[in-house]
Image (cartoon, rainbow, N blue to C red; front, side, top):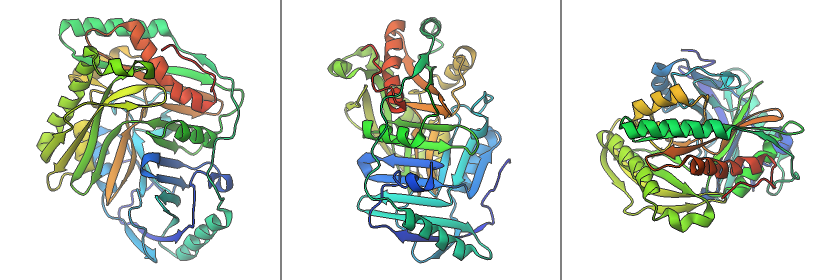
Length: 438
């Protein structure tokens, strides 16, 4: 296993300090761009992390499960005082959409699966806020923890970190002809009966006049997308992967699991038609059936919402079905992830044939796009599907968007759907005046 550190046999010293009020993103004004960021505005939860005290990486597909099992194990921590209740993590990271494909330029440092234990975590949960510092056990560890806590207290800003920058001119490029040709190819495969659904992704290349300000991009993302999880995973010396996704892959607390099927999309002006569109119902129901079937061997009980709901985002509307399960004893996040990912919402059905089709025809290294990202620890896990996202390097960004192709799909309509989905990241990068066809 290729690891910077494994945490196995490692002992830690940690300390916490309550803060009267804190916006973790605002702390970046004093500490610089965080290495990780995670925010759920609807849950009033936000966490920012600085530094990488420990990093765990998997080298190949077989090691992914082992890594996830170890991240869920208790840490051997000596706390200087009380440990904050309900703190997410302490491991934050994610993994590639598909383990068997090689990383192309820009994705190398993110690796197949990469999880970090930040040295500093500033968090807000409802009315509570605080900072946690970690250090390796050894001489000077307690002093190091106390110094880190004091550093945050001394630099703690007041107020919320709103977006500040003006519009940024973006140069964009993406091939409509190539994407629609791939949709046509998928439709021929669907008509043969080998596929029931496949999700095709494409990239939009964006370039600004200067390096993108990541904290500003995060501020825009969370303000524009309050229904979504805003995230950032930055690799030292490399690229940053960030976005705002509406889709939870799994949230595990003890043996309780929450997940959702989110498939079927329309522009906000066409939301009511989405509820009666056969094509979108077919696409959505395929995902619901898949998730229920995948969870049944792992759970005592599985239940789904009786009706599809509309999730209204700023730029797009989705069909959603919530799904809950009571996991069998001994089943943890690693097995849930292996069973669910990739769902038909981002891969296709049958899964193996859909992934084979994507390897042959998509012509895109998704990297972590549409892969699981989030946090894990001994008290649970929350992993989301990394949608509405971009890989940012300096003044260049590669945005990723996709559309589910089923029988009855129209190439021009699928292109328009991906154009609409691209608005979330384009506007966050600074293109507030960007428009897309409805």
